[in-house]
Length: 55
Image 1 (cartoon, rainbow, N blue to C red):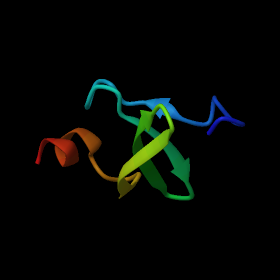
Image 2: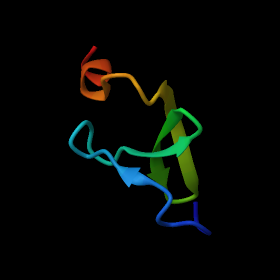
Image 3: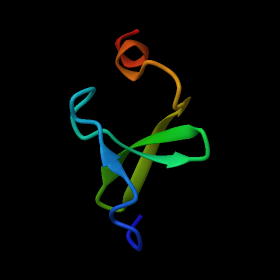
Image 4: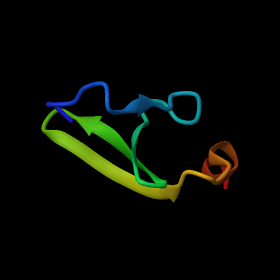
């Protein structure tokens, strides 16, 4: 992530501080930390993200 800072997207409208990046047909969601990241979910990009996170 440090080498490619524009690779990810902020999903703050869904949850504060939530970021994600695409790998094939999936979005890997994570929270940035001072010493790295915490991956929280890996979701197919076709899913309704707002609905998924509200469940």
